[in-house]
Image (cartoon, rainbow, N blue to C red; front, side, top):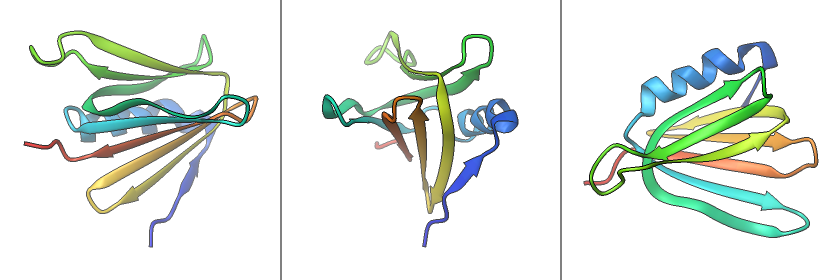
Amino acid sequence: MTETMTIDRNQWVDQLDSVTRDHEGDDVTIEVLDSEWGDAHEAQRMPFTYVNYDQKDDVVIIGVGGQSGSWPVVLRHMVWHPTEVSIAPSGDKTALRITEQDGTVTLVTISPASS
């Protein structure tokens, strides 16, 4: 059973930096769940570059790509004014759930890089 842990806001920077160190180069899928616009995939099985929290601008940034000729540019997905960040490690995968003020949820699933 996977246990989801809600991260205290004062630990967002350190915890997200740890996810980056542990998973850089792995595959990432980003899904946005929005009650007004519906659910959408922003990225599927792209190389994970980083996730961080910028306290000054109050934004969680997820970077993908930029690590090879196949993915030469870093693409960024931004979650503005997050109210909650949760993490759920499950075996060799890690899932992040980031909730915005308006209730929109971004799900970030990181799994070992495919060959």
